[in-house]
Image 1 (cartoon, rainbow, N blue to C red):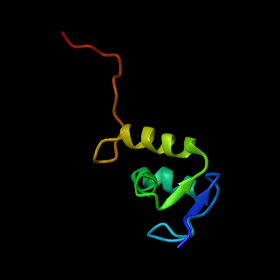
Image 2: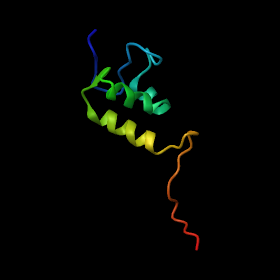
Image 3: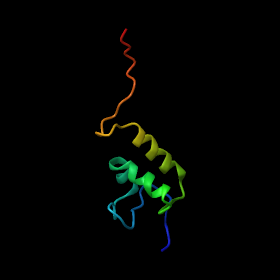
Image 4: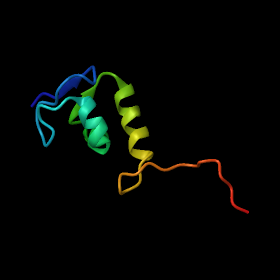
Length: 76
């Protein structure tokens, strides 16, 4: 089987649980899936920014899907 090559986030995935959804949609809803596709070399991302963006999105949410981070408020 030939790996699908993705160049833009407007392209649709050709298989899997997000088949016929754009990469942009998957990034917004399941960035870990993009990371998995890349790690397992199932899809070739010609534009590495897609994978980097997926990593930033995935790492900026907790396991419940809420974003978190330092808000600048320090308690003594």
